[in-house]
Length: 212
Picture 1 (tube, rainbow, N blue to C red):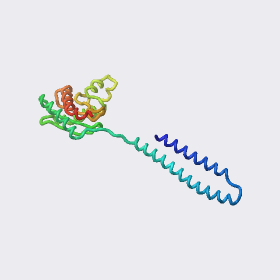
Picture 2: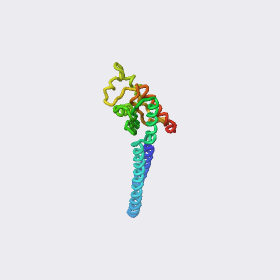
Picture 3: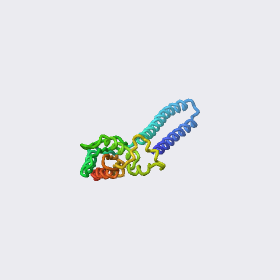
Picture 4: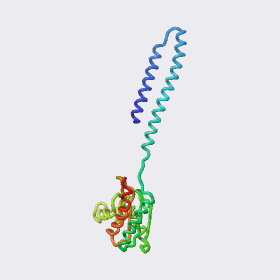
C-alpha cells in the first residue's frame, strides 16, 4: 500500500511539472499578451504548488499510517481469574494424591500471574514452581522434554547453567486458539512425572475457556 501511494504521488507530481514546462514554452510575444500570460501563469503555478503539496501530504500520511501499523503487535493473555482457576485445579489434583505442592502460573513472557502453596508444602516449592513455569514459557516446551534434551553430553546441556533454568518435569505450556498464553509449573510431588500430571490437570480445567 505504501509503495502504491508513493508511485501515485510521483506520477501526479511528474504530470504537474510537465504541464508547467509546456506552459513556459508557449510564452506569447507581444507585451500585452505577456502581461496576461504572466498573470495566468502565476495563478496556475500557485494552484499547481498547492496540488503538489496536497499530493505529498496524502502520500506522507499513508506512509506514516503504514509504519504505525507495523510498529506494534498484539498478543493474547490469560485473565487473572483463569490463571487462578488453573492453579487451584492443579493444587487440588495433587492434594487428592496426598501431595503438598506449590503452583505457579506465568504469562507468555514468564511473568508470574498466580502463585499458590498448599498448607504443608516446602518453602522451596514456590521458587521451583515459578522457575518451572518460566522455563516452559521461555523455551516454548515442557520442562520434562528440556530435562531429557539437556542431559550431560548433549548439545543443549549448557542451558543448565542458567540460574533460572529448571530441568525437571512439572512445567507445561498453556495454549489456546493456536496461541501461547503462558505456562503452569508445579513443585512438591514425588518426582517430575507426578508434578507434570498435576500441571496437566490444571490446564485441562480451563481448556474449554481457551479454545476460541
